[in-house]
Length: 102
Image (tube, rainbow, N blue to C red):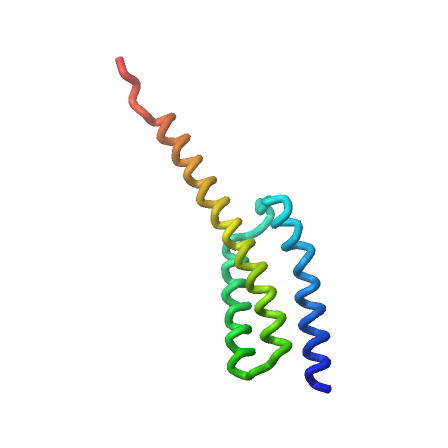
């Protein structure tokens, strides 16, 4: 009986994450997502997965394995976007600060 509540909770919380993950994966847009939040969230989900494995709690394992894959994908997309934005800003700054040849 306890596992039934675990599976229902795991299913619903994982399902609630899917629309946001699908939107980001489909559009590739991560502007409204905090890199720090997603990094912490992904680490937290990984910790829950380890806990589930150590406790052999199948609902925790399944939910967090699925969520970890989705969160890691989104985190990598966000990190890539941040790196690209920083490099383009740095490149623009270098172009504007270049000495003028006479």
